[in-house]
Image 1 (tube, rainbow, N blue to C red):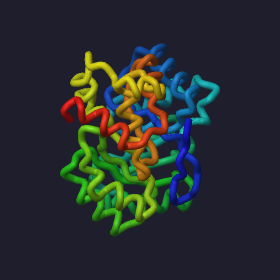
Image 2: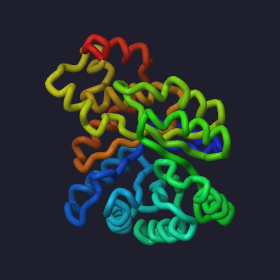
Image 3: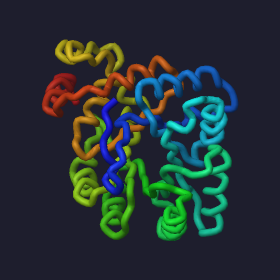
Image 4: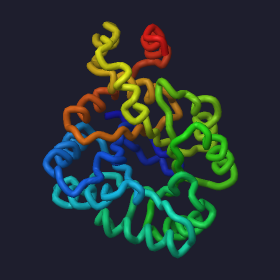
Length: 268
């Protein structure tokens, strides 16, 4: 898999990560989710993104990766999603325990919640080496302007937000701002929580795309996102290894012009 550098450090990060919203919120189904993790790792993936908001997802990630010999290969990302300094510290300490990690690669402030309060804690923990990178997130177009404002006001290593071939609002200002400021970008909702793929179901892929190695609309949509130079990593979520394999096939170098032309014929 291709990698792109994290601007604040130069560390290479594989361009396709794994989200856990809904898909890892379970106490069972370990075999299928373990297969997803093995497929993801075998394909070169490293970043796993979670949050206390995602129910049991952090615990599931911790439990499953603890049984994997590759557990230390992963790049673990999670979030703080509460108000108040003490509450934030308690929640983040819980995330360390749930994920079974002595350090967290990336701790993000989820959906801008009480971000000024949590930022001071995260900076201190980064200095101490408890976390390697700090970030801030949201998932709606309506908060892109606020994310941009915060990025210009404070220094973050990562920003996470929504972007897809059918929702390109982030291209207007947020992606260029992140590039200008040297902030790594994580892309959530690449399929609009599945709505985009459901809309495309039954529609044949363009022949040229198949010839270039794209075998599914999931791969096509991922390839489009990765064609933007300001994107560092895209984090689709799945609970099925077969879907993970399709997603990984999106690591294809195509121009946005090619992908846009093929998509416009569908009426998007």
